[in-house]
Image (cartoon, rainbow, N blue to C red; front, side, top):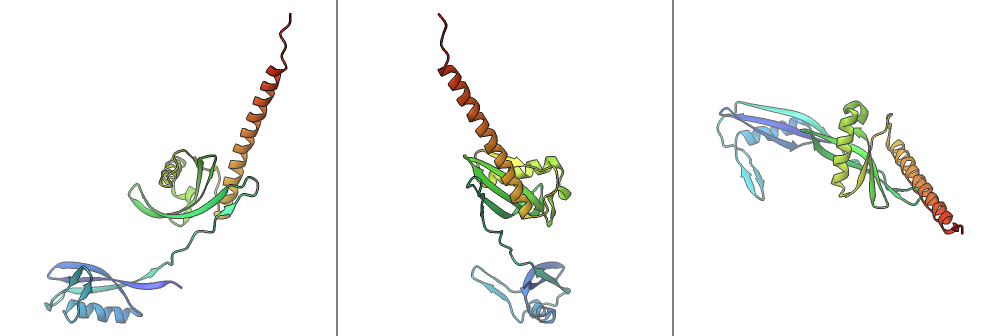
Length: 201
């Protein structure tokens, strides 16, 4: 269930004060704001006391605000094909002066991190940022996880949700593993060829 709080502006002697008040109804929040503005009560905190005094106030504005509950990211999932663990994540970041919530998936394979983002500010990331900005933001997020070496994944199409993102990372890492396997096989073939070579007389 969403919680409610009330953003309050109290102006006295031309100076505006802004604070947030919890309350069951907007009327109760307003009554509390009036008591504060007229000095009938004050706000006492461990490190400060806020007392508005008894002078008349210019105006009071009370606005209801719904607080969205914090949503935990889905639990980590194991890629059955290779044993890598995929971590869905939610981060609140500031990027280019904008504060926003982003969602993505990350994993690590042989000390290389792989990061993909699928949502920013509640919308598919492709609708919020250009491809270049997605690359920069994904790299920035990868750095925040402490990866010394990581790959920023930016898919061509939309990833509609966390399941799409997980599947995309799984497929990408599977391709990396397949390339590694082919390189090993090629090296082994070369080594076998040299071992079987006999110089003619």
